[in-house]
Amino acid sequence: MRRIGRYPLLVACVALLAVGLGAATPSLASAGSGPDACATTARSLTGTLADGATYKIEVPANWNCTLFLYSHGYVAPGEANPAQDVGDPITGAWLLGHGYALAGSSYTTTGWAIQQALPDQIATLNVFDQQVGAPARTIAWGHSLGGIITAGLIQDYPNRFTAALPMCGVLSGGIATWNTALDSEVAFQQLIDPSLQVVNIKDPAGNLEAADQAVNAAQRTTQGQARIALAAALGDTPGWFTPLSPEPAANDYPAQEHNQFLWDTEVDFPFVFALRAELEVRAGGNPSWTTGVNFAAQLAKSPNLAEVIALYQAAGLSLRADLATLNHAARISADPGAVRYLAKYISFNGQLPVPVLTMHTTGDGLVIPENEQAYASVVRQAGNARMLRQIFVSRAGHCAFTPAELTTAIEVLQNRLATGQWHVPDPATLNSEAANLGPNFNIFVAGGKIMPTAPAFTSFTPTVYLRPFDLPPLPFFGGGPPPLVP
Image 1 (cartoon, rainbow, N blue to C red):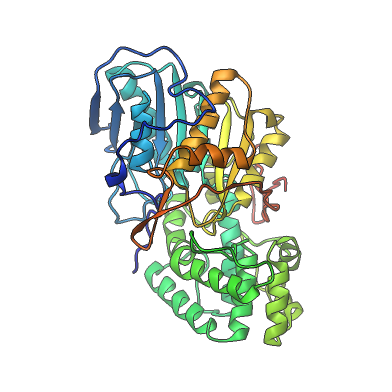
Image 2: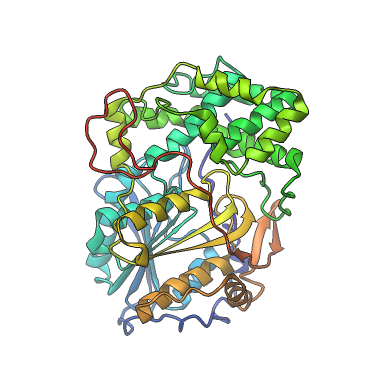
């Protein structure tokens, strides 16, 4: 099977540029703003937690009593799983150079490891307290699966954190995320390859190989392209794939579909047609359902509706007939215990005990930007909108941020802690602040080369997340969907 692993921050492994990193500082807040410096000695600590997970801690000599606890992203079973305390070396060097301590753990298992990640991260905090000293401020942050873990940490352990920065995070929660994936899977299976397993997957590698063959065959015909686009629309997969490429024009539907095909083949299919099996094992069954789903109504809410209509017309296919096929397909019911597992590990109740700043690219086809709409809606329903702010970067790719954009987001959050109020500049000002960090920060790795990359903060409003995502107290679910609030 091809690589289906971690999808880390794409600017990682560029430590050769980590020189002169303290030369420029955004003006949003003074560097290292926070409590008075804590007397310490520069140190780097590693070790093993009681459950076998490892940890990594870095403390600068001028520690300012603030700790950043980093949660790393998804690691596929069988891949290396070292402890990580930062997403990329440039941002990490900036933080250490400005007095911040770093910490993070591996998780004792790979895959959808939220059950293990939450206590492992708290255990890492305990090690820090014992070996370095209790921080005055602890900021949770992380990318991708680490973003959902970050949000889970402040929800489950509110007294341990001062603020949070979930980046490209799975913030619709586990149930909604895997339900959305199932909608796309079912459309692909029903319309392109009925032999595929969409739940209760017995042969992950074989299932993924069959899906790859089917999507490549479909891409060679206009009818197949239209149906790929429909499946993508039911998951809100954007029609923009390559990070430093221009976004296709709003009416360039063939280009959008080709990019969705790339998301399928390069990123998404390993998760939905293979790695779902890992989730089902740990959850004790299938946690997803199509019971009660109206696929026509789902498509009507998708931002990709116009693309699908145009491609179906060009292919001479009946969209109405294909949607009827989906709506008449046998329904998939979830296993109640598996749903309860995925609700616990984890979905969100909107309670924000600390300020939270989220960050997302607009062209993310693995963790779609609509995750931010879902999270904001839950937070608003809980009456905590004042605690949340969200910023966006106009770029394709998953977690496709530059060190300059990350550092600027950190300063926005630090300013909130320093002043007690949100002061989130407009995108033009954020871009200016990021640009002022200089050429060593405004870079991105593309095609194995380090490319100068201008900051791309933008004003963006995600469309509605297509599946229910808010969790009231959970009853016994039976065979149908639980009473979630859309």
